[in-house]
Length: 83
Image (cartoon, rainbow, N blue to C red; front, side, top):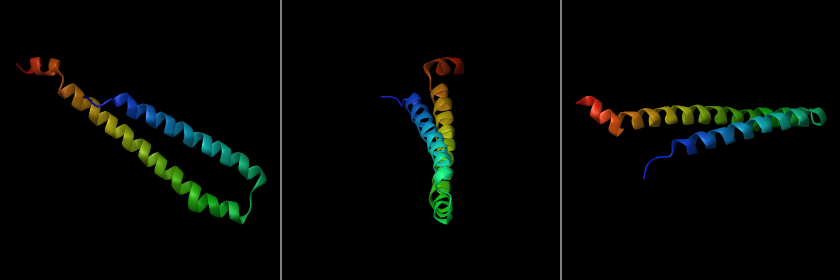
């Protein structure tokens, strides 16, 4: 059983899409809710979550790159190239 790299990239794409939708929804919400409470919510909850999502997406990309390289290095074709 091998690791399915596409499942990681698919999950990352879904997470990025959800993050984009969250930012768009928040921008729309601010049209009607723009006071101290909304700014507090944005600073203390929304911005940290969006930052963590960006970090997670970069980590997933880095991990996917490592998996791709490992798969190349361990492929049967690579073994025959060594000899």
